[in-house]
Structures are given as structure tokens and as C-alpha cells.
Length: 93
Image 1 (tube, rainbow, N blue to C red):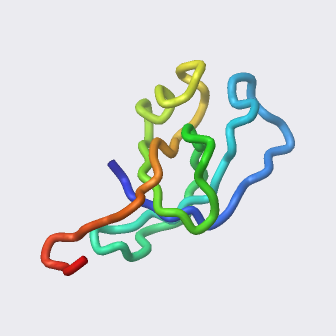
Image 2: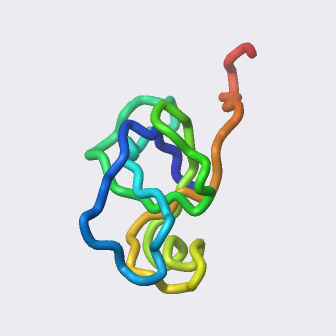
């Protein structure tokens, strides 16, 4: 599971067959402490509910292609869930 924060949306001018209606979102990967890590990436939103500012978990590679219907659409990353709350060990809620 990889954590990230949605920082924007992508509007494609051509949509690959199988990705119709699937939002493409810009995600900033986060480290274990919740700090930005690396460059932003584009992820297909398999939940179809995430939006800018939300904390999400996503998958990359083959697992990302399996998260969408139909399987094996050409995506490198897919959002598979929205995080409601994140509790870190040693922190008070």
C-alpha cells in the first residue's frame, strides 16, 4: 500500500478504451511520516470518488491495471481507497 495526497486533476484529450469515465488525478506520494516524497504522478481513480486534498492509498504496476474494469488497461498507478484517518505509532489521536 502506498500513501499519497491528491493535488490536482488531469483532463485527457484522448481516452483509451476501458478508461471512459475513470478520473485521472495527480497524486503526491507521501513517506511514512506523511511528508511529500518524490515527484507527483498520475493515477486512475478506481474508486471514482477521490478529489483534490484527499489522502488516498494507491497501487502501482500490474496491481494498478487489475484494479479497474476491464482488467489490464494501460495504467501505471491506480487509487484503490480513500483514507479516513491515519494513526501513527507513538502519536496521540
